[in-house]
Amino acid sequence: MMLESRIIKGSAIWVGLWILGFSLNALLLQLGIPLHGSYFSSFMLGLRDLLILGISLFVWKRWFPQRAQEQSWRPSGLDFVMIMIGLLVTALYYQRLFIIGEQSSDSVVILEQLQFRTPPRILTLIAFQQIMTTFFLLDLYRERWGDRKGLLVTAAVFSLSHVFGVLINNPLSFALQVTVGSFMGLMIWGTSRLRWRSPWTPFVLHYLFYLSALLGKAWSGA
Image (cartoon, rainbow, N blue to C red; front, side):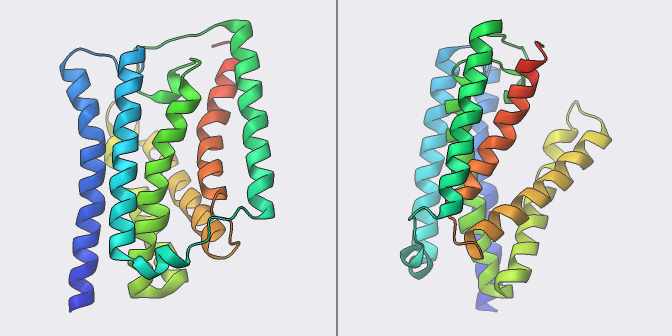
C-alpha cells in the first residue's frame, strides 16, 4: 500500500512539473507575447526550462538518492558518437540558416521557428523533460515493476501525456503519430540509460529529433 501511494504521489509530482513548466507559456500568450518570436520570450522560456530542470533534479535525488548516487554520468562510446552527430547536425542547421536567413512564425510550435536561437532553446527544453521522465518517472515505475515493465509503463504514460496537447488545433492522425513516436522515443531513451549505460544518449537523441525536423524545414527553404 505504501508503494502504491508513493507511485500515485510521484506521478502527481510529474504531472505538476509539466503544468508548472508550461504555465509560463499560457502566461506569455495571455500577455500578448509570442512564445518564439522574440529574444525576451526565448530568454523567459530558457529560464523556465532551467528552473524546472533544477526542481526535477532535486526531486529525483530526493526520492531516489541511491539511484542518483549510483548513476554514472561518464560518457560511453555511444555517447561520444551521438554527441559528434549532434554537433554535425547543428553545424549543418546553422550553415543552412546563414544561407536562407531566419524565418519566424506565429505558431507556438518550436519546430516552426527557423532562428539562430532555436537550438539552445531545444537543449534547455529537452533537458528538463529527460530528467523528469527518463530519470525520475522511470525510476518511480522501476521501483514497482522492475526495469522492463517499468520502462513500458513509463513510455505509455509519456506518450499518452502528449495526446491532449497535440489534439488542440491538430488532426487526430497527427496526435496518433506523436503518441506512437513518443512511446518509441522513450523506449529508446530508457534502454540507452539502463541497458547501454549511455546517460547522455537520451538527451542527444531527443535533441536530434527536434533539430533534424528543423534542418529538413530549413533545407526545403520553407
